[in-house]
Length: 541
Image 1: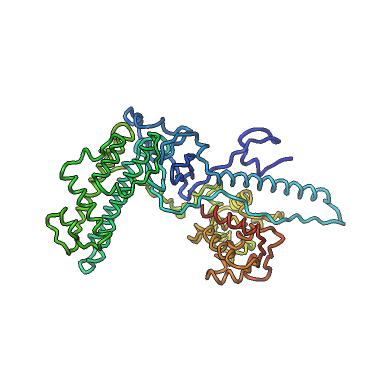
Image 2: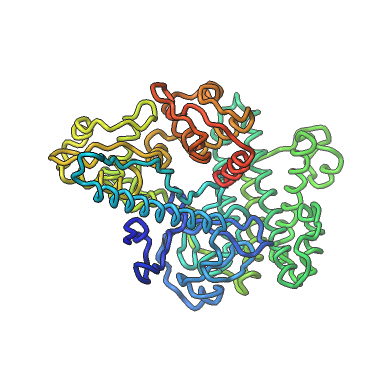
């Protein structure tokens, strides 16, 4: 028996004993989702992108790396642990890959059985065989983490990556990137200060609030960085990395004492004036955060020109200076992690952020950046189909309108684009013979994948919303009642509700023929509630 769907993932072996490989999950920006095998490396999640910059490898750069860049080995950015790439695959991605393989194998078997029955009764006047079955949406590993990510490009190997906490190392070459991580924070603070400085004089309160937030961000990032490196050092020394440190890293003397345990003083390169300015700014933060900016007697001892009861003075340049002094301390920590100062430290401008992709005139939505095997034309057709469907009930496409929308494209090219969509599970095609475009209708997968570029909404997030509303109600889930609670239109609601209903066995799901819903209602048993709760957890990441 042949397995045409399954064979798309074949990397070796024989037809009866295939070696398969399922592509890793990618973010909308094309990065690979990774998960550290080190259970102490909070939060463990990070992403790796492509080589974004060509950096000539020198001996000075190599000396700070854990291994040569761009080899099949990954470094945990939070702990520095090195392991094979496969060790960093998220457990949910492995599970999703297995589900995908099972789905494709089952579809191949169904197709083969349908063809066998069709061949058996071919030409019979007594029996007429019409193949058809309800096909569950193809499971796809999906990148769903939505919290704030720090995007960086390693200035040692040029790798694009993103972390969700303080990143100590580049996940490609293992060079310390702590300096770049904090420099990005300083850059954002400078943007905040510049914004405050542009505000008109009659909005002084707003400007002060922006400056206060920028000032707070410097200390927050500085404290978090000091704590992360300290805990990493304790772990490397074989000691408990989760020691309670309280707010020790908001105080210079206590921070020096903590780092003395590691044989390091990260403040050693600061001048007396810089130490004084650092202490003053830390105290300013306490006044702004805990005393509404009103100077008390404790702060007055740090600033000679301050008066008790007045509002602490904030100047943009002082905040920039605070960030610059903090950066010097972080640079010392970065040098300690790498065994030597970064040879790129004097580069200007620093390599901090990922550049936005350049949009081509024929691809303004950057569809080609989606992690799919489809041609650009097939992707454009899919978006057009999503946009044309007014109610999300997956009706057959008006092929005349399709030809009109793509009038500059030849008929044979459109036919092949539709065939691509069917091959990858985004369309169901009628096998009628003759010229012209084949009749076809979108699958649920088409909406789940292409509604985001078509409408700017997230059908996965919508499914989570619908699922949570369903779990909050009775076991008999009525589409009309859930629909009213969402306040959405039919087009947005139907794909989310149908995707949710696909998690319930077919016998307890009712189609809604003649109504505005793709699925009318479904009934949940306790095991369905468990399955849906786990489904929500996977979608939320």
